[in-house]
Length: 159
Image 1 (cartoon, one colour):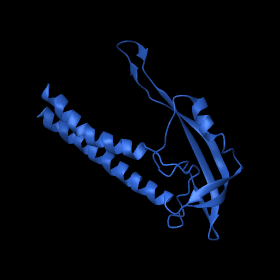
Image 2 (cartoon, helix red, strand yellow):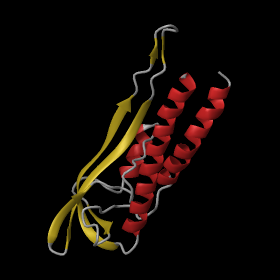
Image 3 (cartoon, one colour):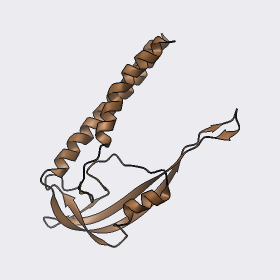
Image 4 (tube, one colour):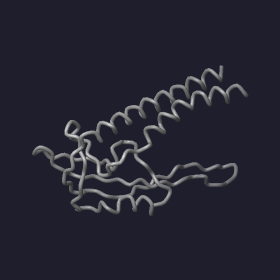
């Protein structure tokens, strides 16, 4: 019975990861296709810290991890209308870094009030992005989503 429950939980998680990854992969391709360069003004550029609270009371040891995520907001005009976006890359899956310095380096070209080049597909005007390079994150989501149920099945056979 535990094996069935584990398969349902991890199988559902796998389906969700494949769904999100595939959706973001398609969005990334659409955003990159036919993207036009527009002038944008950076309105927010900061690094946000996130810490997992993973403390093992039995060992009296803190296993918490800290990650740093670059966050940016910018305004731009397309066909006479003002829009705002927060995408560094043409995907909504954000990358986080193990060090603040690495996240700050990602934001270095985008200080607040700077005028920069943004890229936008006119068919998706609210999804402009600053760095015109595809991310591997959607493919990673898809692969993990496909492997997770299979790995769960193999591991559950040992118990």
